[in-house]
Image 1: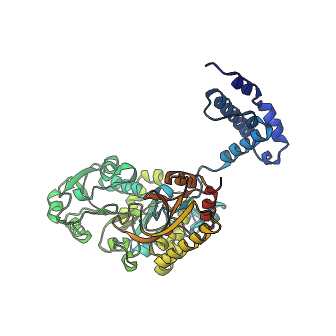
Image 2: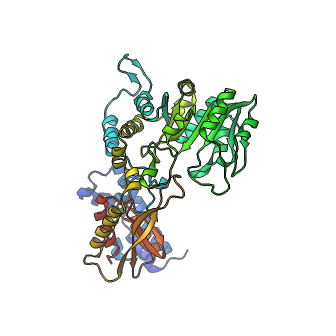
Image 3: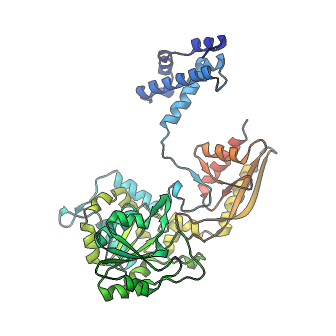
Length: 472
């Protein structure tokens, strides 16, 4: 590539790494920056300037190579390097259990317990009564049994793991009978048939997509049957001409033939949310009361806790599951246990749980409270704002998310932003680049903030993000 004289001149003016490091020594900003990091970032910076000059991707002039400009660029690069990859964002999408944004927020008691346990040694696998090695499940087994009514309980790292572990324990090398209409696929293309294949169980489908009868299960029972399985279709709904077999019917069939019955509840809930105007979901307590031998569900969806797969049921079956060698590979750590125990304890008082657990609070928050947040933000955003900013409040619908209550529409109050000279996509990108990032949605060529999932303490930050958009 033939370089022009101005390009050659700029290349000669590029700062050397030694010079940059020498200048950094006299700037307190770099005192806490490891020298290896500073050297690497300096080289990256100079390489970037060199490529910009050669390829003309960005206009580079002599002023850009001045010491103060170079050091300012270097500080920006260092700031990016020191910023954690995993960091908080403001969820203004209106999706409460947003998988991409970390699903459920932890209740304050859970956060405090995680901090308390993680900074000290703990009795994770030590029985303080016997003075000998214990089981990590003991931290949550008692409270899980108390809430659910089950004989025994344990937890692994997510619900897919819980399903895999139970299938491997109960049906490896045998048939697991499932309704064709319940062969669900969850996020990330994880499918019940695939999990079943990994467990060593053989899938035996019965019924049709929309209708499955008890006789379909009974006709499938044979010498190779190891498990009758029911899967709650928590992330989709089949309506119209439908028929499904109840948990109690399946339990009676299982007892008749001496076959264990398992139910995967998916999102799982300890509270009947229909009392708050939401679509009714089967609760964990109802599944246990129906006589299901083993029930699995998630900890970080409707339950509102950390990521975990919870397993409750009959003691003989749970004892077998706990002895499965896979259990060690799928076990949860002390921080998850700390958060889970504190979250579960809140369910001793359901009213307190609804208020204290952020997921439940967001799902049941009165419309008037959402509107108050939106109005407060609008007032702050419009204060001394230029005419090119248009802020408009609109009604909308939030979603539960996380594969839960797929048909549920939650009335909400939104604020749409339009800025002359900036497209909706440009507004979305710049809000996403803000610190902390603001994640919203685009509707009708307008960037929209849904205030169901915006917390009171985040409104000032949202207003600051909008003011940042308006700066030249």
